Length: 441
Ligand code: CMX
Picture 1 (cartoon, rainbow, N blue to C red):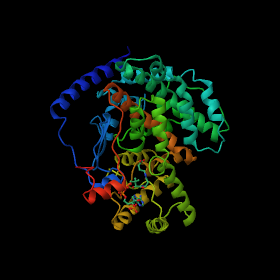
Picture 2 (tube, rainbow, N blue to C red):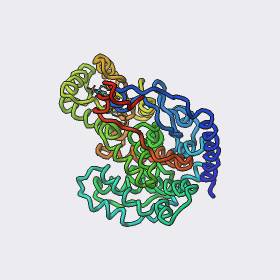
Picture 3 (cartoon, protein in one colour):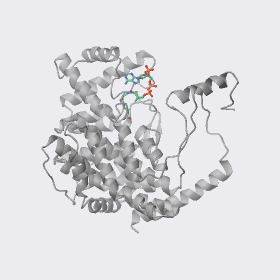
Picture 4 (cartoon, rainbow, N blue to C red):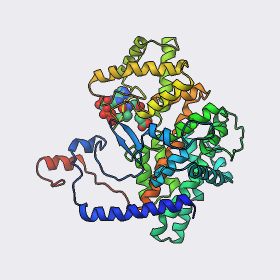
């Protein structure tokens, strides 16, 4: 068995034993109280699941197995001559809880390059059946669904598999899917925006570097951006729509392809991952509206008021959990300061950052006026010439696979059951308030 797989299994077995002991002694302890409003308002603040790969702190932002983004930037292995972390390293960390060596990361790059070979032709043909104007996320998810024919888990399940082996087949599916996602994603990009030009993979490159190459962005700067981008978008604990959906669907023993595709349909919503395209669209419309690509703070403030008065959200701002500037925004800002400090779009993003929070704060109802990850990412992509903003969420999706599939492997290895929370009707609630129904007593 390869090193990562056997290390993962030994860590998961140890964790499973620990969890058994914890539950034996403390399983009846209360971990919170639920208010009626929370049941109506998106279950915000309810702790109701275990998700091992990362944890979000409202003030500090995301930590992956205890490591913040700046710590990962310092500690994870880099590409030769590069300064950004390799996403392979983050995957290894999420799977094992251990920081990988450069050799571990290199082994993973080679493994994924190998697994990416011989993509079944029907995947591309299935995408080709869609009209060109289908949204890139629709084309991407369609490709993932077509690839589900390759699921080892579903084949083994059909043959009759011992539940002790679910983890192993989920692991193989997850590794194969992650390896092949750049080819599917890049195919969608080239089909929709580059007249279907074909590009052969460069198996000598790392996963993110090869993805940049498949997209036909061969500048070293873009490759470095992809390494950072695919690292910081990978995971955001378990309750966000894409992670929770993947987890939920996976709990029905739907395989990694079905579960990931479900999560991606959630990522494609404008309040979640699609916000990255909405941000750039909003800025471009603002610049057009104001007749300048260097708007002042005052001009931006006026446009924000217009957006709000039209009953729209300001994309890229706010968060269901975070209450400070997203460290993923800050990491991208640092990248921009280093590589493109005088870029006009980047400067607009920074001016918006100075202008928007006090306006949102003044409304009194928005719990987090600060920028999230999506507020910055588009400007970086535009700088390198990727202008097709409808594509941006696909990049988020390729990255998100690392976190949600690592978490799926953990859920199968820990033997988590099918997820099935309780719901009630407003009729139940009214009867309970009158003392006629005991639903919560
Ligand atoms: N612009 C305008 N209004 C906003 C807002 C924003 N950026 N963020 C929140 N609000 C509004 C909400 O719509 C809500 O209004 P109503 O009471 O009229 O319904 C009110 O403020 C309270 O919302 P909240 O509790 O602060 O935020 P939620 O947890 O409900 O929602 C989020 C969080 C991210 C959906 C929301 O802030 C938003 O819509 N932001 C813009 C879209 C965006 O950037 N999404 C990407 C998030 C990161 C990601 O998943 O990729």
